[in-house]
Length: 329
Image (cartoon, rainbow, N blue to C red; front, top):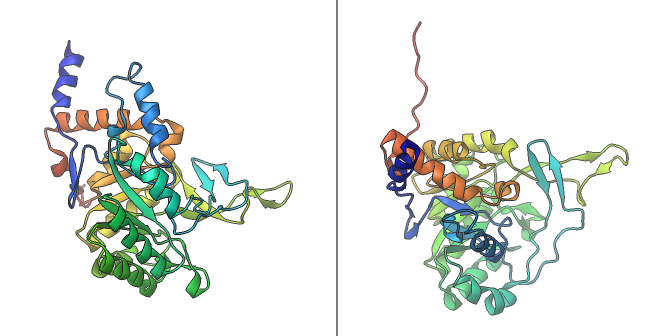
């Protein structure tokens, strides 16, 4: 009886969170590249209702789509993924069917997905980002775009937009000029001071920030003395990077006041709580979905139980981190 009563009490605590005009049913968001275009997870959750009560795609307050570019991209050569200690190394190469296919085939179905949809945009130039945002703003009603600024800028010899303050500012400002949709800038983790890049992104017109993209890493096949993936390096995700990304979220919260979408190794309720406490308004789940596709349901249940136990709202929890003080002798 005690357990049942506690569960009923926990259910009374709302997990709704606002990211500007976006009202999400949960602070959990399916990360770009890990939920494709959401349909597989919608079917999975619907088919699991009998096994897990309350299972639906709405356990994710939103999904961020796989990258969308102007033209189709074939992606990087295989192998594209390799397991690492407490993580995963991937080099997908932003494979996607291109804007025309997205508009004709995917966008109509995404509008019926059952949760908010944020479209991830990629381009080789600032003009491509702006063109994508303009067309999507005219032809769809998706409420938000996430700008993947870690893709290479061909005009600067392949250097990532997210690694150059002028390039980052240019992309965001160009996109801001052509759309009034909610703009989320996805920052790179491997910069000298991510706070400086966060400030530049907000000044250029970003409404929110994803902190952060995957960390650069590599794994070696010692017998062949070559990379275990098709390229020399890839992006590391999963629990191994969580403490590193946690520190970045904390730094960005000190630098700017816009909503932060934490992204990096969240798998359990504890992980999401940590990100929320240090200042994230929402937490993207990526590799965690591959470890346990049903983890959003479990995390949401754990979040409600935590709020009930501490008698606080989600809004009170977000950003409640207290810097350590001397405990005395």
